[in-house]
Length: 155
Image 1: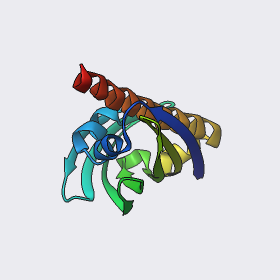
Image 2: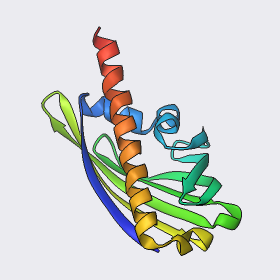
Image 3: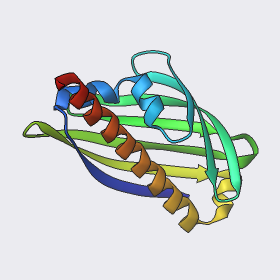
């Protein structure tokens, strides 16, 4: 079952700083909802453990995250796949692009998610709304973290 989620965030920080944060496993780990660990395996590969509750199903996913189509500091694709045992699997990715807006940055994303196994039986409305909520949480956490860092740096 596949879905597409799109959104935009205005981040009060320069493009270069936003780009660096998008490539920082520590920042990504803190912003991904339910992320227990995110370890860098190479410049473009990370291993992740994420716990999520979707409706009545709680699952712990072991997965891989890859950064592809890198075009610093303007855009990249972040792609991940996780296996949640009996709950099934989730895979998805987001095309992320950054555009300068004065001193701020406009981050635009188009995310695709695909869910299979037991979770896919929960119904597309629940999965779509949960996916939108998780994507929204990630990008608003990311925004708060990066623009907060900016405030600390200039204080």
